[in-house]
Length: 205
Image 1 (cartoon, helix red, strand yellow):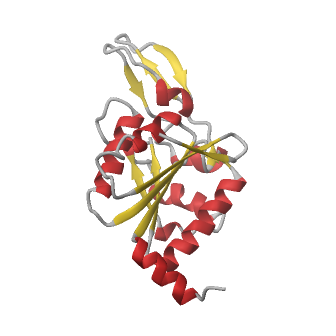
Image 2: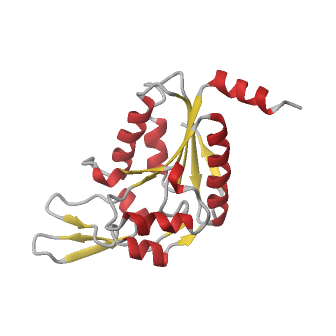
């Protein structure tokens, strides 16, 4: 049986890993809606997180992200997806031991109350102090997958990581990650599609 020191040495040779978890419908079942509004400020559609990931917006329309930024709604209504919460905690513990990194990456922009948002994770004994939350909604890409791709590229361009894996309920987001494989041929890529029960399956490019 390998000693922990031997394990650390092997991981060191392999290089650091980066594990990325989506939040909505991956770690928590959430209920915020994004409204699609026309020029007359009439609401023409209300989208949940999964619908928003693939929605094609008319150029004359705009999004109302009021609920998506509401930390109280996130804290008071979100339901933990227990298998993925457990996976996050286990990977975070191991990553801390071996020098790798875990981040959360959401399609949302900044919440209106950071502490209320973060306390939701503390409620389930997640050491959120050791996890940075990337808010892809702060970027100006065409859609959530395009924004997340920019963030994946940012981390990989540091040349700090030899492995990257993503847990996400959106196939588009996973494909966005895997599309970077040719650009970073020395990095090992894993994309894991998460279902409503919190089970995941690996997606190949």
